[in-house]
Length: 298
Image (cartoon, rainbow, N blue to C red; front, top):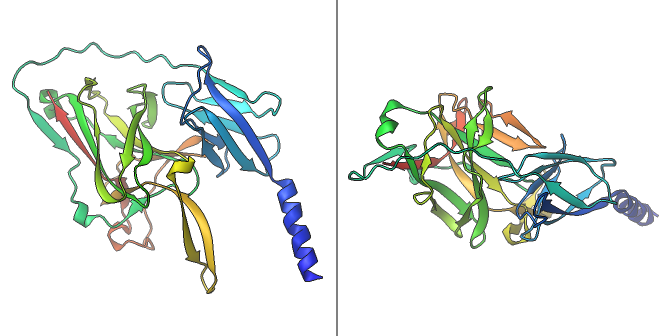
């Protein structure tokens, strides 16, 4: 009898679960938008579109409001309608400053140096899309090497070539990530294991903004990034299986507030100071920042 009741409860749960299927396209060209991150507003439920702009999302929520975020497009908020599964996003116009190239001998400046041997805490996304952003402030010395040349992360991955995106944001009037500094995807690939992963910007001629800017990493909830792992719940010997998405990104502790943010559930939230119960002793009562090394040139 208990077995019958359990099965009925499982079937009832499945019945309540529904799947949202759709495709994200450019509102002007009607071309698919790949790697668009999608959230149910104010819920820890989300996914990503694949390379063809197609997405699927399991949810128990009825009358859901979906948030669509893709670089180069205005963030879109839409009441889900199963009869209209094509989501059109409007391109966001980016006005870039005029660039004057310096033809003198190349100089380099490095910001955010870190030692990979000191990193013992990583940010991952679990099974939900996320964007984490770290602020870099402008300094007068940057005038000598004002161009972004290279970004380096310390990544950890259980799979080969886990795909992620880098977004560059200007600072808005409230000090959080605002308009795009660069309006295209900067796709990175994290090799299996713990590795230094580099994004080359040298060909883009992007100037370091006078108000500073944010470097962010964006996870993709796509099949090729998924891996299965086992774990035990506290007080239980039974092994459980779960799915997560790579890669993870190394972090560093900081005594100062680094003005870091996380975009999840369809909105930006400030990352707060850790408590004294953080699992990493180095990070207790400190701020945790993405380990990002930025190379500048002239």
